[in-house]
Image (tube, rainbow, N blue to C red; front, top):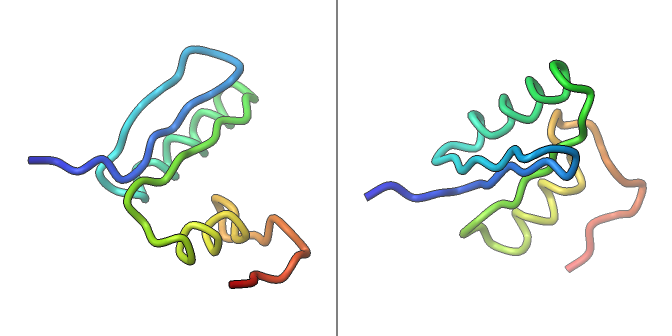
Length: 72
């Protein structure tokens, strides 16, 4: 049985895909941005809250998305 770890959606079009691997979801986001100029987002499933906060702060490409420090 497969486990969906991430869902990628785009508010500008009908893109909605689920992925078992985060790398595949990240690649989908990067490709969609390059091909369409849209700004898709992902929802991560089944991760601890600390991992989700760290991922949001890092952004898709590992570039900090916020100047706010992570707090518990």
